[in-house]
Image 1 (cartoon, rainbow, N blue to C red):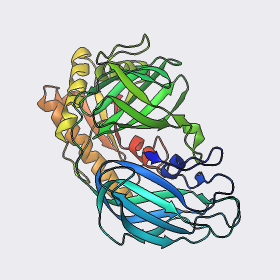
Image 2: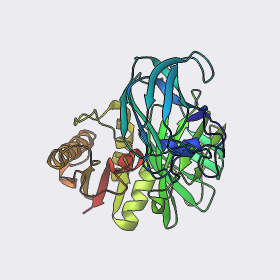
Image 3: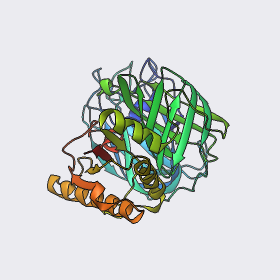
Length: 366
């Protein structure tokens, strides 16, 4: 998340640097072309070994960021910074990749944009990414409850790593998953839908985030979405069933298909992570309420990796899900499996949020 940012032009805030979209970015306030400082806060202690930056989408000649300094701090957004990179960017080029010149662990990354390629009015940068390792975040504890947010009351229930809920704006509902302090959701309002990402504060009592519309592919974030918990009571909405099993049952009854997020596997493996088992127990509960139903368990991946490998992996993961459900008492002849790899995406694989939506299990009534 952006912790400190300089003045910016119009709809070009620093958060646009984080949206995986090279067509949107940050631009300085008119005339303030040098010495712009942006600080990003990470959700957990990380050591970044490679940085990438984009300038291909700038819209003014000479405005592309040129000389930059990157520093990292473990203590705060304002102190304790150590330099890890000094680099010069090419004009109008994406995916400019630089090895960190020092390995420093921290939770705050300070980017100083010293100058540009000659414009006296604007400095622009379109993307900023870091790759490395991170310490596993501390568990949050319960995040269930009702939150005051930018879009009215937000009712959130976590069942394992799966999240479901509703919000009191335009009959909105959402589903998704949580890893550490990061929630990735899909929101739905009637025929409109899109992804959202939220980061919880360390105490789990508030979050900050952003949302997009599916129809806005290639554009900047559609808006901020921040919330503060007002009660640990989940509450609800007239248009929401109140649980993972309830939403699955409703979707399968209405359309014969339901997406199941929150089933996490070890990287490139078929082992279901223990924190996901309560989510699968919700499937067991749903099947217990509908003893005549038979389902196909579909595995889907994002487009990372070879297509043939992804199809095999997704089939094996679907088989792992079936094996767990059978171990919990579901008759094996009620369940079939299929693996589609990345062949049936539901979102844009060019962005991390899109890839998170594509990594999923789907249940289909036979």
